[in-house]
Amino acid sequence: MLCTALLAGLLVTGSAPSRGEAETAPALSSKAQSLRRAESAALLELYAAESSLARARGELQRLDRRSAELERAEQGTRRELQVVRRSLTASQIRIAALLRDLYVQGEPDAIAIIFGASSLDEAMAGIEGLERATALNERLGALAASRANRLVRVQRELASRRATLDGARAEAREAERRLALAVAAKRASVVSLRQQRTVTETQLQTLQAQAQQAQQRSAELTAAATTTADQVLASQSTPPTTTSSAPAPTPSGPRTLVVDAVAYHLAGTTASGIPVGPGVIAVDPSVIPLGTRVFVPGYGPAVAADVGSAVRGNIIDLWMPSRKQPLAWGRRTVTITIYG
Image (cartoon, rainbow, N blue to C red; front, side, top):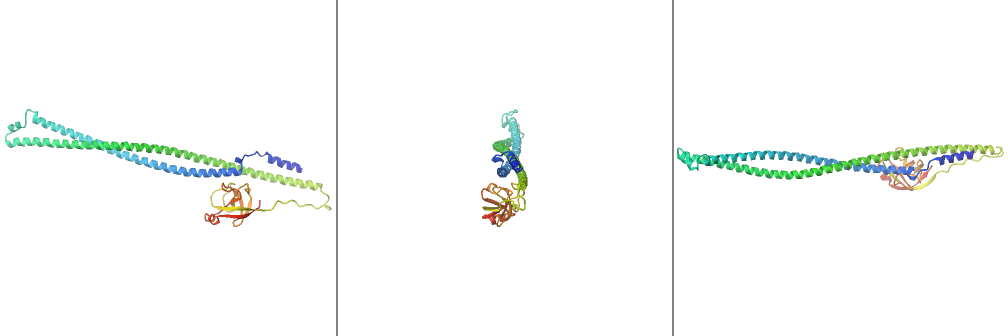
């Protein structure tokens, strides 16, 4: 029966599917931490990209407002130029009419006005009136022409500003488009990393649960094998009056290990799934298995419940409840007691 029990234990141990390095608990824990760091970095990049996108959109809105203001200025200049051109045309028409009155309508020259007048004063007044009217309309025409030329220059200046502004708006729209694409890509990256981390942490929890079940099953088989062995030995032993029973073997006692102890303060959960807190330490599982009870001088009793990318070999990380305590602790070489 003892052989049967031992064989059953071997079958249970051997029936578990072999796992590659990528599926071990330390590897999954390390992968989950790497994904958490990558997710944190991706979130920072996303924040920076969204800030740049907001600035680009603000600049585009500012350029759009300038474009609207320039459009109003262009419309006002066009209306003013139309008015000035109509005024210039009216002045030219009035000047032409006066010239017709002077030279076309049956009067060959200004002398005829003198002979046709009833008095010299009337003749002089008529000539002066025509001259003043002609000069006034010429001045008005010249003023209108000057204003028209100025407005044409303004139009050209506005057209140049329009070309520059339209170019700046096109560049701003392109920058906004590129940044929007970058933000979308970084959001997708964050979502992907978060999903990968979730999957990895789920795999780690599943693996740890399987390990606990296997450990429990192994303990049950070991207990059953020990009971069977005791029964077999009892049935084959000599009478009690001549034989004394041997004490059952006891497991090996505590052992000590020299390690470098580093303190930290971070919120969250450990690789084993329990929340961080006093008595939680991170270890290299190849040196100190997860779940091992230890005693750390200056810190107290603790349980190896976490891992870390920087925790390799004889190094442990001690969780502290405040940020000041890790600074006070620093890095110490201590001799810890491992209870198993």
